[in-house]
Amino acid sequence: MKQQLQYMLMAAGMTAMVACSKTENAVPVVPPPATVSFSSTVANIDMNGSTTSFSVVIPVSGATKADLESKFKLIMTDSATNKVDTSLAVTKTTVSESPLQVTVEINAKHTYDTAKRTVFVTIDSTALPVASGANTKLAVRIMPFAPAATWFKNESFYAPNTYYFNEATQKWATIPAHFSVLDSANATVLGFVNNYVAESGVPFLNMMRIYNAEMGGGSTSAKTAKINVPRALRLIPATPGARKGTVEVINQDVVVTRKDGTTFNVSFSGTGTFDMDTKLIEIDVNFDDSAFGGAAVNKYSYKFSVDKLTL
Image 1 (cartoon, rainbow, N blue to C red):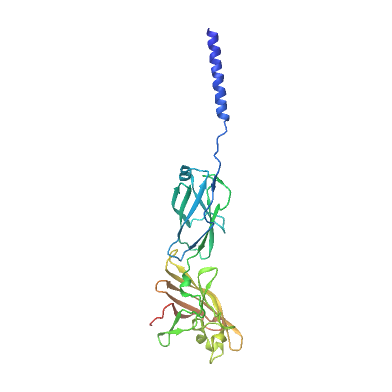
Image 2 (image 1 turned 120 degrees about the vertical axis):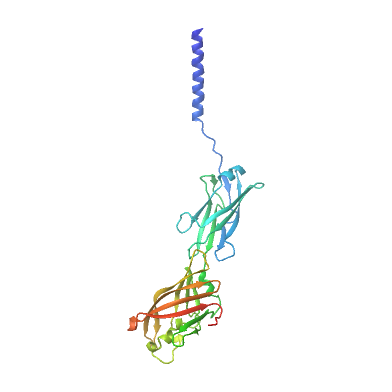
């Protein structure tokens, strides 16, 4: 009897061992990946607009509402650097059924970026396995904040009202025909170029009068001087997206043509301020004339205004 009991206990132990072995070797059940497809493949955000947010609907199949509520996550990747982008943020996520879909609100925050850029939005498949298929990526194209555009209009012969301080009279005087241009690569840069008259220029910062003697004396014109400065001022917001800030007069040599066709260079630099609400730029500029025997420091003050000023 005792021996039979031992046999029974041994059999029970072996059965338990086999059961445990089966449990340990069991292959976990992995649910099939969900099928996800953005309702659109492109979204545009203009950082100069009244809103920097947009919504996108993402239909889903092969998952449950509970899966989406706990595992759904987006990844933002800068297309140029292939690094995680932090300027886009999900502000609201709504999961609904019949049909199963996720509605996501995304907001773009202001940065110091000055050029157009694209951010790719994808589903984080490490949390929610996703099947490859159509529309699994959303390209968000971001137009940068462009303070320089305040002093530009896309119309022929447009020029902001330009003024210089006349030291002799101690009064402000106007300078016409400062035809403004924008830099395609930097939305903070403003320039002044004559694109309307061949082989001509602009009366840049009153330089034709300041350098009249060096140009040959007597009557001179913008067509004679041929001064064009496509990158003259850089407008730097006080904080990302701020409508006020400082102005950097971009340090460079300006080429001026004499009456006899020869040229000379004037180095210029300076600082100032801008205000997009008053639509006013104020700068102090230093001209360095040492390249042709003049003084290294010659300071002048200027204003650029969208509206006419009473000074």
